[in-house]
Length: 236
Image (cartoon, rainbow, N blue to C red; front, side):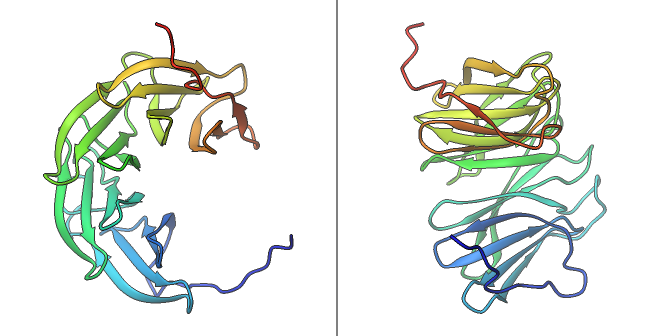
């Protein structure tokens, strides 16, 4: 199979640093690492802008909505994970893609800064934060309130990637050596943890194919094929 470029979208002046993309079945959404935060709705047939969401203005770390680092889609709404800056808490903004306007916003507590990853399991939104000890938050997408929080404890690293497979939430953390924590989303407790070997450091991305988890490391330029941790229900 030959890969070739079929079209290119280029942002307008000031629309810089695209850090994340998502797709709703019709349109592409590009999250920009700008202040204030911006999400661009792109027609994939014409590769042109058809809508723009802009976060509230303000001073990063103090007020407003800044720096998109994560996007996910629940079949109706787009959810935007905002990095902001400490001491301002991270946020998850629910936007209506039809109008590209804010519907509601979840705001973390004082320790939940730097939202860096989002995932959706068909019912709840999960947010990971670039903080240590690690935290991942289960969010009710209807009320946009916290349901449960996983706290990784000392040495758990900084969550920078999430993926869902087989009824479990996997949290990849930025540490040496890298770790992937397998959580039961019903209780937001850890079931087991994979820890890399020497040189397998700093998890920056996770993906799965329904059988295996794939880990993108910061240092090593190839993903590591990690056998499925939940292929068989643990006996303990």
